[in-house]
Length: 215
Ligand code: DX5
Ligand code: ZN
View 1 (cartoon, protein in one colour):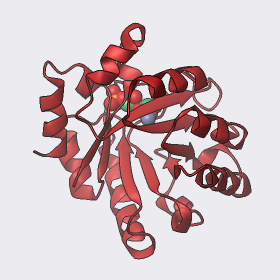
View 2 (tube, rainbow, N blue to C red; view 1 turned 30 degrees about the horizontal axis):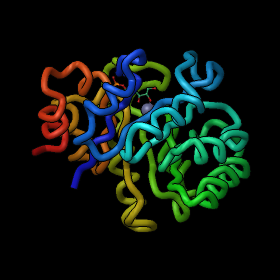
View 3 (spheres, rainbow, N blue to C red; view 1 turned 90 degrees about the horizontal axis):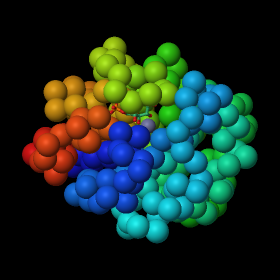
View 4 (spheres, helix red, strand yellow; view 1 turned 45 degrees about the vertical axis):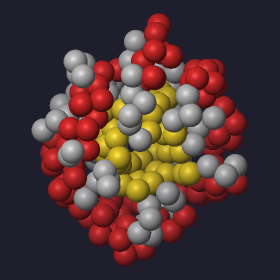
């Protein structure tokens, strides 16, 4: 069963409540938090997650593109995140592990994210304790970029690692996913697809969500 997590980075921030309701047939709502340091862009932060939490019961899939995530993960859980993912490149193994433990201690799901140049083996120290691995199929920082098909061998390697070590862990891909590239991601072993532009530019959003799922 494939899950779809539309990225609200492609929504109209001046009409965010309306645009959250537009994706209500999806499985998760993907929220991209960027600090202008880990990535060269600034998006949205805690107050916006709190505001979204008030207007939807959807599962909030919060992707933190920030340095030293340990400083903020508990606040994102308290703001209403259901899943919090942090980049393996953003701190030391000790601090990443501590941040993942802090998310779990809040009763929320935790995961790690890999930039395109980061190898699959990087997740090994965390894999037994996490609920999600997110593979970036663009350089993080901006929506609307082209899908990197060269990330698919990494997705397949991670699918094998997940099936061997922690089969309930989800495998998500993020960046340039559309009605065509979704098939490549599913074939490689992903079970959750993030899509920003493809969903919000669609004339019929529920139909696009169904298409991305392979329905
Ligand atoms: C990029 C973000 C993505 C982005 C995806 O740093 O993590 O979630 O919004 O947008 P599309 O689907 O347009 O590539
Ligand atoms: Zn994202």
